[in-house]
Image (cartoon, rainbow, N blue to C red; front, side, top):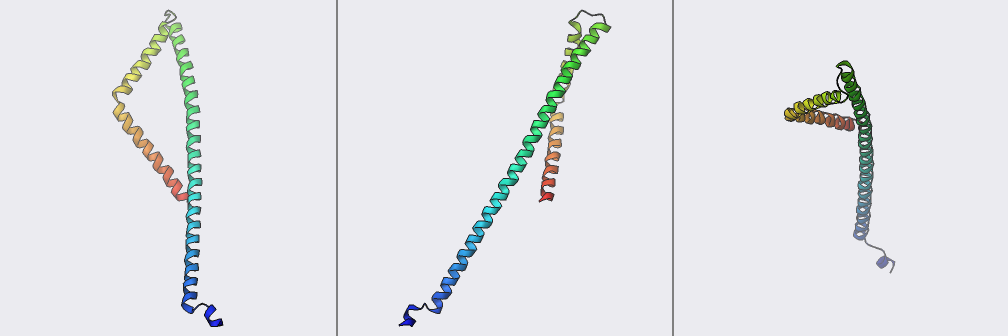
Length: 135
């Protein structure tokens, strides 16, 4: 009667195999979850780096723009003083200079665009290379 309640060797082997399969699946699930957590953290770090860079560039652009505006006012006043022009003509001279610069940029926009795209590509490649070497 004791022999009937006891599982056979084949049943024990199937039970052990089932436990091993469950353990492998649990370990694989934990591994995937860990990789997903790592990926999420790396994505958050990269995103925070990009947002920090955008904020920094925005601040720099703001201050450069303010500097250019005030320097332009100063140059306009200097033209008025040196050339003994009416008060508003110096501003027209500075505005004409900016319009000429805009025309040059507009006429060479494709070449400038290609240069900027290649510069951005090289920057992104260096960032991804640095990211790959860190990991």
